[in-house]
Amino acid sequence: MGEIVLSEVKKSFGGVSIIQGIDLTIDDGEFAVFVGPSGCGKSTLLRLIAGLEDTSSGTISIDGHDATHLPPARRGLAMVFQSYALYPHMSVRKNIAFPLRMAGVPKDEQERKVEAAAKVLNLTPYLDRRPGQLSGGQRQRVAIGRAIVREPSAFLFDEPLSNLDAALRVSMRQEISELHRSLKTTMIYVTHDQVEAMTMANKIVVLNAGRIEQVGSPLELYKSPANLFVAGFIGSPKMNFIAGAEAAKHGVHTIGVRPEHIAIAADGPWKGVVGLAEHLGSDTFLKVQVDGIGPLTVRAGGEVGLNYGDTVGLAPQAGKLHRFDEGGRAVAG
Amino acid sequence: MATQASQTASRLMLSPAVLLLFLWMIVPLGMTIYFSFLRFNLLMPGTEAFTGFENYVYFFTDPAFWPALANTLTLVLGVLVITVIGGVALAVLLDQPMWGQGIVRVLVIAPFFVMPSVSALVWKNMLMNPVNGLFAAFARGLGLEPFDFFADAPLASIIVIVAWQWLPFATLILLTAMQSLDREQMEAAEMDGAGPFWRFLHLTVPHLTRATTVVVLIQTIFLLSVFAEILVTTNGGPGTASTTLTFLVYMQSMLQFDVGLGSAGGIVAVILANIVAIFLMRMIGRNLEA
Image 1 (cartoon, chains in turn green, red):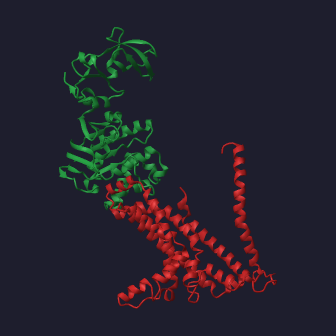
Image 2 (cartoon, helix red, strand yellow):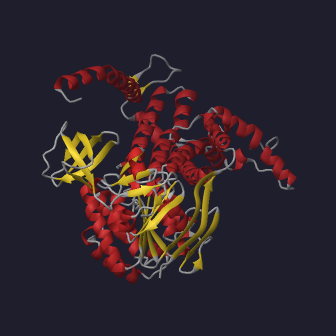
Image 3 (tube, helix red, strand yellow):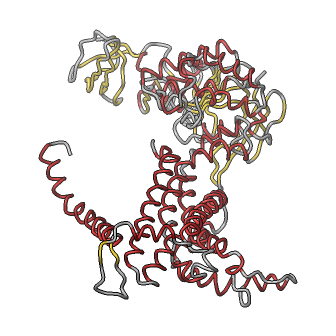
């Protein structure tokens, strides 16, 4: 159980509209990721679902019940905060047991659930430490443990990995995905990192300026972005946008082509000079200045021996072009 | 401060200030210790002589000594209890968003800027006076007999006055501490199902322990030497009911012109302050460690 339905949800702070009417259904057991640039309202939306902020209008229902005006504790949701928000003066054991203690769960059952959660999260050796004595990743796991023991109908994650270093972020990302697979509970995850969104989500909700730009599975968003914003946001490095004469050849205002969909071919239609070559080993990212089109990012193989100043021919892969009209909306075909 | 040269330089630069502070402390202390072993009465000049521990014996056997010791500790403890509990309560209230917050905060802090003798006079003549005081007027308005604060509850009255003066300090320190409480922790507790009372008990109170320690330590130092409030209001009386150690030293050295006895009392007060300090550091000092 954990279906969350938002309808016409709006939120403004002192006249400034942050969330401008959101309709969204998150199905039971789904891993939904809210992604968008900073200030797009994704965290606010999560806080509205959590009940930490009141909606200005619209309704939120959880498990089919209207929860718009329920206090956070009674919504049956658990949240993991960006700063972990552990209670610094309590041991890990007490931190994890805190929601159970507040719910009046008997002592021995508390103990049993804490032990079980600690086992899942590999925290057993640290149960009697204070949060201050733990590393960032361990604190994150404690925060997750505190959420798990409540057996919520959905988990809310507010940029939980942004305080971790890159290597740890990758492993925690996998741990959270595995957790979702084993618990099969609805999870809503907020991030500004599209890589996290792509790797973890069943459903990505791309937000921009308080509006939903597109909802879909990671590959749907990658393959058929609904507009320029989604096209530019999903995928790394960013999609190349070409306007002007070259786009007019395809009968639209702007065309987009991803760096990985441009091949290096001596007889390609576009000729340009390499401005920057980033050799990552597995890949090489080239910034190519193409005559009459502008700079294009191209992803080539790791063994490509191109460097600054070399002249290359580029060929976009047929069928991988994205076409957009003046308003930035995708044009089919 | 990494190289040998910079370390030497920093020590050289610091030494004049350290030396001055050291002299500032050690000269009066040394002289007080020296005087405490002398028969030294200002009314009998030229009769100074070494008397060993005689001054101390007189001081300890003074009938006012034990009451003064008890009064000192009662005063310190009473004021600490009132200011810490009241300070936490006021800090919680002032931390709530409200209209005119800035002005209210300034008003709350205002008593701290009033000189002790002035505030004691105001309390004595305008509030607690059994004839002209505001409290007496209230009592008469209710048909009750006015309470003569300084005659019937002298020490309690002084505790109230001193607590009133120190409440702003405690409130200020505790309020700043409260403002540094992580908002996400509060929200996490809210989601965990903790109501306002439990959030206060499990998050706010532990968060405030360090600030409370600071309040207790600093106030204790100043409360041990409370003087003006007693001089202005009760003059240590009736009898010895509101005589503290500080006031006893004053009575003996200034009113009886006995410098030797007063010095001995001063040294006793210094030793008492150190005992209290050691106690406090043992009890709550570890709260200050990070």
